Length: 332
Ligand SMILES: NC(=O)c1ccc[n+]([C@@H]2O[C@H](COP(=O)([O-])OP(=O)(O)OC[C@H]3O[C@@H](n4cnc5c(N)ncnc54)[C@H](O)[C@@H]3O)[C@@H](O)[C@H]2O)c1
Picture 1 (cartoon, rainbow, N blue to C red):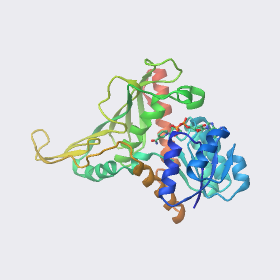
Picture 2 (cartoon, rainbow, N blue to C red):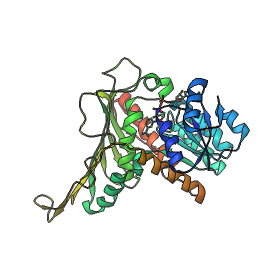
Picture 3 (cartoon, rainbow, N blue to C red):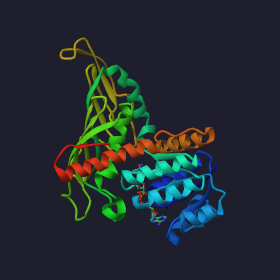
Picture 4 (cartoon, rainbow, N blue to C red):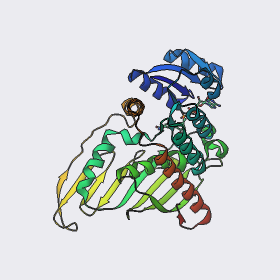
């Protein structure tokens, strides 16, 4: 499978390594800066270099494109590739807002090429284990999740609204949001209440957020997003599930299944199942890219696809609306 890479920054180096580990042909790279592009091409043995996705598409001979550029470029680069019949894996957040995400989904439907959104935590072994175990927890009533950087945050385009779309909510909160949605079986969001602000940096996007999402299955999710926070109760995407029959959590990952009545039940099962060395290891991204390649080979629609990414963008948009209005905002 011939794969191209738009962007040569932090995460596309990981995706390029994943492509090598999965036995793909790394055929082209796109970046507007020739020097960084040349270094990336050399490091990964990539023969073709382009300044735009469009010029790469003109030459053809590419099956799939991995889009890991600043968020404002995701929609245009993804749509151009899909129109040319090239499969796309685009980084999260898939777009600047839900309106762009909708257009991307429309382009995928028209082209028949696959659109995957790199919500990487869906491929994490702890997350997959907890999803399986969550069946033992009775009815899930509420959840808590974290998308927070402690004592650090990104700089550059990430902190500029016109290039990033949003701040910590769109960048980190979306990890917690997608992870809990996956664990709950992809319910539909009904409404969102959020308090979002900027307290730790001199930029025009948010660095602090508290978000409450109500889902159509009756579950309520509390999510914290942040950059430069003094503390976080959980690592990125860490999620807790509170059920009528027990409790489950990620990082450290464990469940407590209760015997007997919930209020006085003994714990039937408890344990730290996955001692981890690294929070987001290369293997997570290898598994993600392998799945993308398998979907292409089998002509299957990837999940997380455009639809999952779009729903997440609707929640992000509603959270920003709620922070502005001070009201609970419904999600269409
Ligand atoms: N899933 C994850 O774990 C994870 C981690 C980090 C970043 N991300 C996401 O990946 C995306 C990229 O983040 P990053 O940390 O790699 O950012 P980065 O700033 O390190 O890299 C962005 C790259 O895009 C390039 N670029 C800018 N303008 C371009 C253009 N016009 N054409 C082609 N390339 C252009 C930059 O030169 C740079 O190489 C973001 O959407 C981010 O949210 C996801």
